[in-house]
Length: 90
Image (cartoon, rainbow, N blue to C red):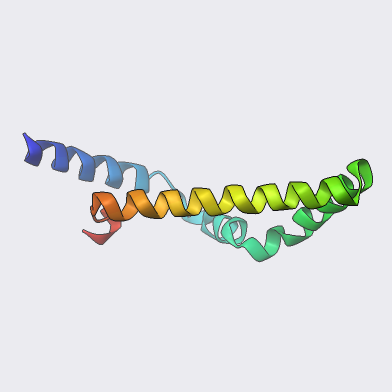
């Protein structure tokens, strides 16, 4: 039973991985680099600052930092708890 589930998992991974198109590879490489998103983040931060002021903006930034930290640590906890290799490692 477990072998069948693992085989189905591999087939699904190969199917989903094959849905992409090589013509879009460059586009997705640009989209996934955070440095290209920095101007948008700075613009959003400026608009938020203009709308709600410096004190509320500082609270918002602190809140986002706390949320990102909790999410990152929770993800690492589950990642190391399950100890299953990602499909690309097989």
